[in-house]
Length: 474
Ligand code: UD1
Ligand code: MG
Image (cartoon, rainbow, N blue to C red):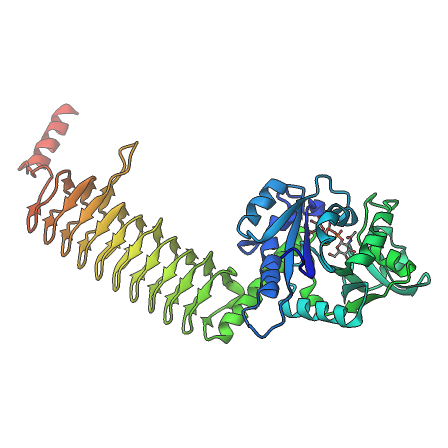
């Protein structure tokens, strides 16, 4: 491992001042994944291709952290093979690479990537590295053309006696700013060449920073081969403002949805549906307008997700129907189950096959067995409900005494009358029933009917007596 040919260095130490956010820029979410996560997943696919025949380099990966470095390294714990290098003071991208020198000196080549390149594809990365090696260049960098080049470093070719030269936006003359070819922030260096010039960087520029792109100039001056290759700009867009972040999220969203549609998912209004990058949808799923699906949710074939449903880490089987406005979080809905409208299913709840949770129903850490129904206006918390149970409208498991939570067990074929309060811990055994309006505080034996409410008293003639009293009084 020590002698890997390629070091991949991701620069993630900057603040991203223009985002005007306390969160380090690389952690800002695109959909529900931090920006850095996209690049890391691309790098991971490059280093460990799923397709065995693809050429994979023997590479090590490191990330530079600095601003908000505790949070960034916290996020990087999910990527244990990524080494962390601290850049305590962030004096620019050139300084970042200087700081990492003891690390990259171990390799023959070092690939340096801006942390804000979420759309870079594995194919582009592979081609870029291959072409650099074939050309035997000392430095390669990717560029692209854009009609809004503001903020980017401009690529000047055959100017100032150099083959390629990068001038940062803030240092550029009005004429240079008209150049539409820009630096993408993706560089590959021959380590020997880089070592020779990296300490020559100066910070006498508009931002008082050490600019990595100045290395290109220094290498030119030293007579080394420098290549700037233009590629499709759609992959190279960086994110520097909140507006760009929102535009990027839409772009990623569009491409994810188009990808799912190409695999047979039906989306009524693709512009009104949001899906995160970790979601899996099977063919024949239908998504109605306003649906959001996040986390590692899975939706099985034939399921219909109605308008304004929000799923987060939800596992839905086949032919599940969510009518409308259903929220499912960290929960599982089995084949042919149904929920909604206006249902909240959360905290490791389960809906069994053909089970139903209906209007204004909340399930928290509860299991509803096969063919059981909770059709209206109920709260089931910490409840284990068996098969073929009917929970009457307005029923509640009273699971909390202000301090601790307790569970309710409901057996098979139980009929819970409307407006039953089940004060946990309590068990309703198989085939039992409760009378409407009962407050159940002790276990109900198998097959028994529990009626726990005050007996009704009818006061005959009450209305006329009252009227008489009122007359006398007035
Ligand atoms: C940089 C390039 C610019 C290019 C653009 C592409 C420089 C000087 N300019 O500009 O030519 O067109 O990217 O998007 O490099 N970072 C550190 N340590 C630092 C400073 C930055 O790790 O001290 C990291 C940031 O976290 C970020 C990356 O480097 O991931 C690029 O920094 P950023 O501030 O976005 O550079 P730009 O000004 O966009
Ligand atoms: Mg940038």
